[in-house]
Length: 523
Image (cartoon, rainbow, N blue to C red; front, side, top):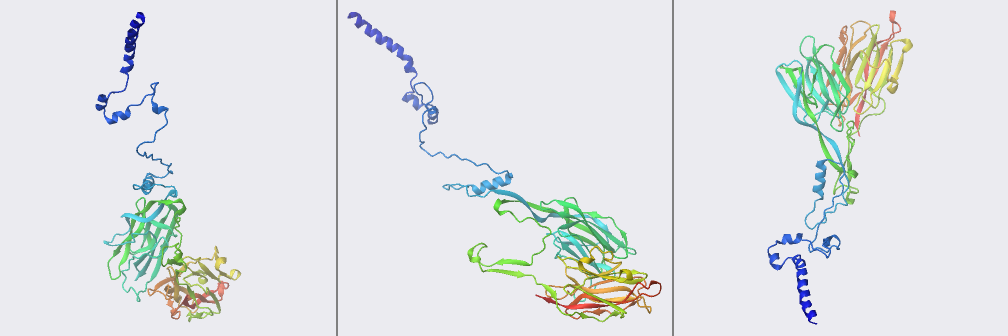
């Protein structure tokens, strides 16, 4: 018993000694907690019996405050600019859900914005006469140039835009502009729609520095703003075009929006040199929803005849129904029935051939000779947005005598002629004609002059009269100018021929002409 009483205190002492290391590993005391920051407390893991972090196996507890985890969906392969724009449009204000599940996928496209930047200039083709006039359309590129002469001086210039409409700016210093304006001739260089001028060349006259011919080269503008040389060339020149001057180009990456016209002073100024005004092709990047793709760029699209206008609420609302109105471009036509014929300019021949378009205006006459006789006529009707209509009267050989109309004339060896008179414009029409003869008893035609203008939407002919004249050296006697009745234009001709005689008896000769005229009507 005594032994047991002595052993008990000994065992208790040994247990206390063994327990000392375990107490040293216990958690911090309250005093220690006072010296530890709250942040450090969060980083101290709670340990289980095995000394491992309880968070690794213990189920997660609901936090005392909400945790927001932002999960971004994969973005489509688009530009950085569009990504930023997309993020900005889907950002949310406090309290909103920020859901983008209803947003349509975005796509990137480019669209043309027209000319941009400050103008740049080519060198001068022709002669710098010390006087200049800048004609710059600025917001559109040009595809053609119409120029007219008065008193043998080029003093009137207008420009066609990419869609072949006339630009608002022009150069018209000739005296008598308006109702009294009568020009010696009209000429044009024009590229196809959607093609802009990027290079130009002028031709000087034999006896002066005046412009007597123009040649233009162009590039097609693609939808992405690049340009393609395909090539496109247009040339027109007068008979006294003598020397073609150095061609000049717009700087790289630009196309022409106008001209710097160099001219001589005088009562009737005369153009002597041309210089291109050039600008870069503007393009912008546009982000659109895939179900709202933009209308593709169509450089050859012509102005539509119907222009819908919506009255009332926004398009697509049910309240629009029945509120649509349309504006129609007036349709210009001609009176039906038999045409009215003018008197004869020249004389009546033994044979007469009549060719008439009926529903289109006559705008051009070509003729050629064989054995010193005008024996072939080519009549043309040109109108914007329509195919050229042609009639050919062929009397140069008995074995080849025929009349050719419309499509049957395409590719015909007689198409065109050695000499030409024509009225130019978007809807041109001849209204008067005069022939010149050789002054001899046979009265052979050796020249022609036509006058006319553009048919306006009102059905009237423009007050600015174009005059086109072509003649051979042995033109001696200009005959009476015959004119269509007021309110009408020429739609064809009646050509008078005498049969051939002598050594060229198989070749007929043109001796006189009449105009077939119809009243212009507007629907």
